[in-house]
Amino acid sequence: MPYPAPTPLRLAAGLRQIEARFADQPLMERAGAATAALCRELLCAAPGPLLLLAGPGNNGGDAVVAARLLAAAGLDLCVVFSGDPDRLPPDAAAAHARFAAAGGVLLKEIPDRRWALIVDGLLGIGLSRAPTGRVGELIGAANQLALTHDCPLLALDCPSGLDADTGATPGLAIRASHTLSFIAGKPGLWTANGPDHCGEIRIADLDLPPLPDLPADGQLISPAVFAERLQPRRANTHKGSFGSAGVLGGGKAMVGAALLTARAALHLGAGRVYVGLLDPDAPSVDPIQPELMLRRPEHLLQADLQALACGPGLGTSGDAARMLEQALKCPLPLVLDADALNLLASDSRLAGHLCNRVAPAILTPHPAEAARLLECSTREIQDNRIAAANELVRRYACLVVLKGCGSVVATVDGRWWINSTGNPGLATAGSGDVLSGLITALLAQGWRAHEALLAGVHLHGAAADLLVAADCGPVGLTAGELPVAARKLLNRWLQGPRQRGNA
Image (cartoon, rainbow, N blue to C red; front, top):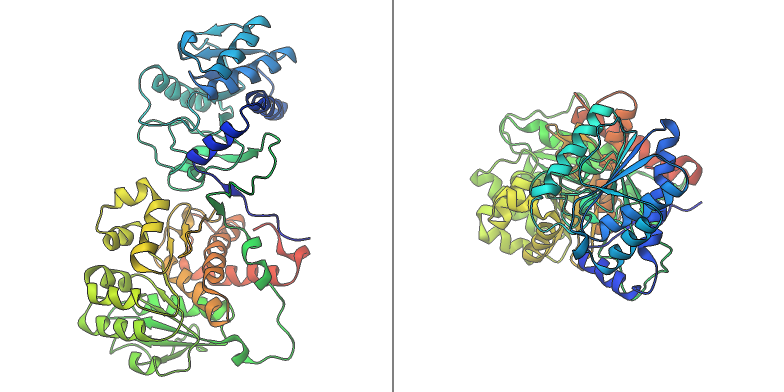
């Protein structure tokens, strides 16, 4: 059984195009029907009164259609409307008229009752600024009622107050337990603040056909995008069959960062792993992982390597800059992290070497490092993570993963992905060093750069999820635990569909 196709992601502008193309279709009726079906499902476990909050646009129309269908099925519900009935868009006005004809009544205030389910149909994807006025009040009330009544809070299309394109929250936003996204997934549901506001996400395609002439803007990372690489190893192999990975870093008092990267590369199957440590007092052997070959950095670059990671614990000294320059000149797939990124941000000459490389390079910045590379604030990076990742690709002519909640991967051909694996346990020292090692190991084994990057990012988050499922986090999860979990998952994937699981 093959992996499911990756989930397509569409920006608001593309969704408007689709809605315009199918304007003759009863999209609002279909959205309302999908909402009603999910409401009935959520109420099965704890039946009771249902509160629907309807805004002044089409998102509110979806909620009103759902209310009409649920009332016809005999459910106890109330609809609170926040807009002006004389200023509704045509489809929403028609939905309101049908609701009224069926005996439905719109309320201005939330009744004092104990609710079993709350539905957010206030704003959807139409956010242009922080919610204020009556809509803002209803968002705050919905969040508080869901907590007080311990009931599900279902957001329609996108939690109100959340930017569907970016995941930014310029003000108050719904904190949903469930989100039902219409037509396609929206990138903001999975990155930045999205995961804290969306809860469980489902997609209702509203019975629309595939649109080959309107390709998705991006995708969620799935093993399907690198599935052709997930082949069992042949019996007739040797360590040379799986490449040699190099790690350059480990300056004064930072040797551990380079060792974490190297251990991750070893656990993910690189045949040999060489480590060049800048600290003159660095050990000659790793007592935890004696298989690693430790040496002086200048000797590392003389080894027969298939891929190189540079930056973990590197420091920003003159020696570090010289070693980075040599690494940039190596005709190898290159992963740049940590201090390698800081040096690139501060030295235009090094950045020029990067832009002129022929072999692929991968940048792995967290938001603060990305801000240095783009000479802006961290807030600006987080306000539009997809745009920031694409700008890094454009400026530095390489592949990029912008780390963080919903890591964004962007490639030189204009494609981008968001990763949905991972959890707060990854917010720990050394986690990024491990990611660099995972990617480098796959590069050393001959994976193409974009496949190694996508697989490394997805596997990194999935390893953290596996550890949390085994009660090893998220609080207190350590970077050193990730390589063993990543190895376990990769071997599951390699053993065939029945063993791969759902990561």
